[in-house]
Amino acid sequence: MESKRSSFSGKIGFVLAAAGSAVGLGNIWRFPYLAAKYGGGVFLLVYIILSVTFGFSLMIAEIAIGRKTQLSPIGAFKALDKRFSFVGWLASIVPAIILPYYSVIGGWVMKFTAGFIMGNTAEMSHDKYFSDYLGQVWEPLGWFALFIGLTSLIVLFGVKKGIEKVSKVMMPILVVLILGISIYTIVTMDGAIDGVIFYIKPDFSKFSIMTVVAAMGQLFYSMSLAMGIMITFGSYMKKEIKIEKSVHQIELFDTGIAFLAGLMIIPSVFAFSGGDEKALGQGAGLMFVTLPKVFDSMPAGNVIGVVFFIMVFFAALTSSISLMETVVSVFIDKLKINRKLSCLIVLIISLFLGISSALGSSAWKNIKIFGMQFLDFFDFASNNILMPIIALLTCILIGYILKPKFIVEEVELSGKFNQKSMFNIMIKYIAPIFLVIILVSSVLNALGYIEI
Ligand code: PFF
Image (cartoon, rainbow, N blue to C red; front, side):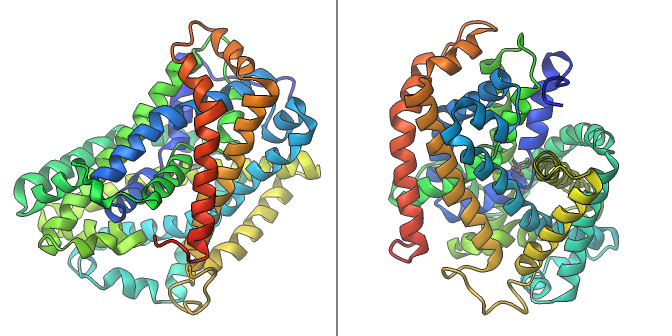
């Protein structure tokens, strides 16, 4: 099966497919709330610097590993060095941890889509609407089950291609909507401009090691790094396609959408809270608390709300499909079971893990792991612990065992590698040191020694 891999057609096919996987709730939901929480401009600056140095290098390495070995992550790491086989396994666990709580948030998106369709905009714009909703047991569970159920049906029946086509059409509409909503907020709402300044102008007094930890975790999540996804994508990439150029395009696309989503949400938070910075620290609920207020205040906001949330729903669905597909394929390959059974097993595991995340603010709100609710714990464990470990091991393998030349040769198959020197220095020295600092800080943070 692995010897005859199909490949993406055309030059843009690869970039679109990889960008389609990269763009999701990470950009629209996660990035704005982290930027708001971790100091606005300073977070944005750290994120962009990390993205063009560290993110760039790691994405190049992963795509090149995939293209060179023509294997999926587990096979690829094993082929590169037997001692590193476990890294492939570790990378495959990450999507399995993310999928359940991603689907819980997908359920929130469905709930809000339904709310706008039913014309409940005014009710949804109340401050406590979202927290009251999370305080319930059955409804969040129901929407979560619907979202993960839908994802499994699509993965089971292989109608993924159709959904991806729809989502490609929707992506440009989503970008236009995000831009339109940002401009509307900034131009018409008092105080919104202070939000723009907060978001764009770095205030270095707000910098802490946790700014870097959070930005790095977000980078992994948003660019689908350190979870084997880009290795898989690389294995389908034709040799004549330029890896470096493609990575720049994916990066620009992914970071661009995240930046715009922040520009849509953060100024609105300022406008509606009268500039109270405490409103910025709401965490995961930020988008769901803020956007209904914006839609409630704008002409035809109800309709725009429906369209907007449908787009977000599709962006979330394509991402959850690719997360599930990854886990299902690992089970098919390694357990030698059929697709149906594999889907069923992944669905059961996801339901089990997702239920805990869905109930974290209601029935199970008193259960905390390292002081975190289940959803936050899974998010933290994957982005801030597992992914840095996988990235660190990848850097050691490439930088010291195989040597960076191994990747450089693959990249140069299709032309000059412009940022070769930066790649070498990043993979060998800067990234590993950085990753160790990130890991240590994350662990200290979880144990309560450093404040988030
Ligand atoms: N990068 C996606 C996001 O930002 O929402 C999350 C993701 C989707 C990760 C699909 C991995 C994946 F396979």
